[in-house]
Amino acid sequence: MNAQEELTSVSGIKSTPKVYPLYPPVSDDGVLALSDLNEFCRGQLDSLLGIPTTTMFVLDFSRVKLWDISAVLWLAIALQFYRAEKLPFRLRLPEVGQDTLPGEKIDFQKSADFLRRWRFDVALAHVGELEGILVSDQVNYFAAGPRQYYTDENLRKNPEGLLEKCLTNRLMEIRDLTRENTKTRRREVSDDEIQQTIRIFQDAKVGNILFNNCNIQKDDADCFADSLVTESLLNMKQHPNATTGMLAIAVLGRSRELILAVVDNGDSIASTILDTYNRKYGTTLDRASLPAAPLHERAKIIHYATQRGVSRKPPQPMDTDEEVGLGLTYIKEDAIDKYKGKLRIVSESVQLIYFNSSLADPEKKEWPHKWKGNLLRISIPLKAGRY
Image 1 (tube, one colour):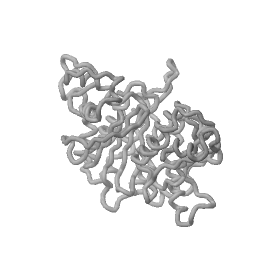
Image 2 (cartoon, one colour):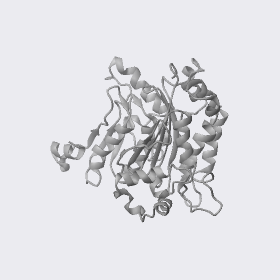
Image 3 (spheres, helix red, strand yellow):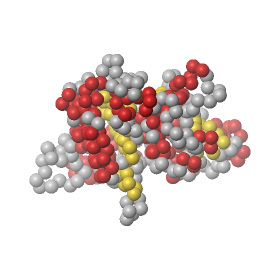
Image 4 (cartoon, one colour):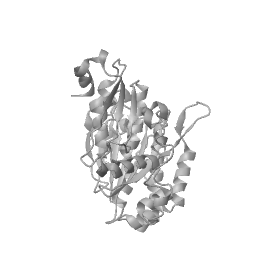
């Protein structure tokens, strides 16, 4: 039963309670994965759109113990959409309270401090003021930063650890890559913010950190900032109409991976590359019809965008395959071949997963999302015993 049916079955729309909680699915160990967020939006939130109601829906994430950082960023993009669609909601985030079981206090305190240290409030700023997003008793949730875990004092206890190294060098907090255009008064992805972020990774000598903690060669590790981070951010810049663009990295202990996530709310990869795709294959697809195109067609267009020599710009007389269209290609090749990881792309309601070889066709599946945007999730395995 979806949220709309449950509301109606309880008491009917006209007499529903003023506050109604909605709970996202989480795994048995309390992880909110990207797939859980997708199920929550599709199964509960989408069905409420366009329905007149006086109910305030509380999106209750208080039972989440571990966050996939890509789900955190994608949640912010989703909330932008639901706010624009006039869905009345507030967020409830994890917190230790009087009713918290003793055995779960550490998990929920860590979960709350994760959101604080990783600056989820930066992402939520693209949705609105915190007072209008969080439940009333959590409006000061981010005010004092992490309360117990991920604090500077704790980081000094193990200064050489992967997590500690990255946090100390400010590599793991959510980064807003946009600025307001003074002429249009709209936010847009900023070259200055991109360059500043790249410099932060370069100055932190992130290659040394990765070499010591991941199963990759030193030369490849040294290319992380100049290649993988740079191309991921520049790729975001290619998506027209993006007013939100964010990057974050985190360690996912359950799968023992370092996660790099990049999201934006711009036009989809498929729509951006569509003119080039039509020229290549002699098709006449238009952007308005893309959402209704079959899965295999949308997946093919996005996969095409990862091939060498493919660019959204019209070909120039002197262009060669080695000179154009290498952004997503570099990202895919680096993630899979250099770092022995995986690349997941979510765009145009399609999910593609690349692994084992950058030359192999990706796994593809429907991944419906009503909002515009693109997500890149790169996972890099850690060495044994590293965290």
